[in-house]
Image (tube, rainbow, N blue to C red; front, side, top):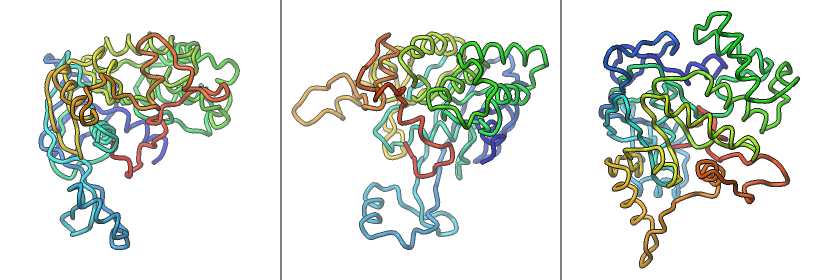
Length: 336
């Protein structure tokens, strides 16, 4: 996937939608119309072919068959049903949280909504500009400088020259990269890349915001500034779709929750009700729900939302990076 493709994957414009596809375009030129932003998903199914499926071991084949996600497409190729018959609609003001165990299909659903994956069955209709905060390197060309990457993103969004200058100033100031802003991105540390990507991703405000958990990863000094900036962006978005493992995030930002299980919608409803049912199902037999379903990789996000920090998320002074931020956009093996 080229740098331009990655940028395009992060931005989806309103337009006519054909069955099984999302029509992509420049988000900056999008108009939501008088009714505001809207997303409609009808009978969405996503299938990943296994081109070497015939050489799979017996153990892996039996495991996949037991979960009910192993099947064959129209060409009789073996594959994994990452998403199965998912339908929902969102309008202006909706805040949707996606929960479920690892591999349930949360990140895959976000990537499909963003246009990174193409569904084989179903329809996705998007009205309004969309920004997908899914991957720390989304749209970044490692051979360009930080400033050049900023200008490239602004040009793609159709910004005029004065707006480009303001965008570069805003991102450069927030990322606090100093002279590194005019050096190639490939020499940046992980923490510097996170700061630049976060500042750039949150500089252009969309009507529809898709967000994965990695976005609040960073060093302790950066987390508080990032939290304030991100919360301001979330409040400004008409529609929020957030994939998370952190109870406090769902309770704070989401009014509705979809619980995904093995690529299907197990429950869809008010956040408090669905969360309570999920926690009861996740609790060990004979024990009450803990009220928390946070993975170790998500402690940085939970700390930022609660205004605190977790010391155990750092190793030797390096910035903690959430596991979701390490996945590449095109990694078909990640269905969570």
